Image 1 (cartoon, rainbow, N blue to C red):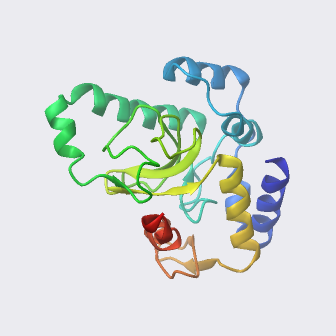
Image 2 (cartoon, rainbow, N blue to C red):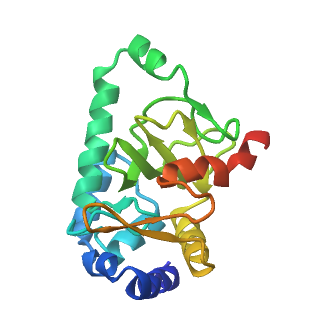
Image 3 (tube, helix red, strand yellow):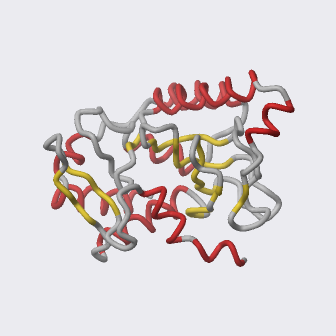
Length: 216
């Protein structure tokens, strides 16, 4: 994890220094312990290592290191997780069944085919109600701690990586190989997306990058 983060930091310094400068120092052990107490189960070690290195972003720029998705601080991750927990708690079984009508796992059985789960732990956000997160309640064909997409618009769930360590290594490999599109935006900031596929939102790219899971 540390090596992948060092590679990511080096890439950001060279290509998006404003995003590098926006990274916060690591969070405290107390912050991680409090989040684990809220969730009621241990966080994956890779998740904790990530947050020991950087406690997300300060929020001074409008793009994030995860192909544009914001790297949530531990406080923001807890806040977003609590919002999803509230959705689950306030929904009747019938309501949740209706909300999950179109939910599915691209790889059958890898991710639970439901709209929301209190054991999906967000670490990245698109400011539209959608996330990347670690899955602590995978399907029978999934892996504990796998990185998935979920949220308001994410009916089809993909396994983006088997772990947060694997996700960060994959991300850096993509960036270093040149699969990065940096664009000037109307607000004067810069955005980061995949070059191939040429989408303006990483979660749209996920559906293409990992489309082969539908036939697994």
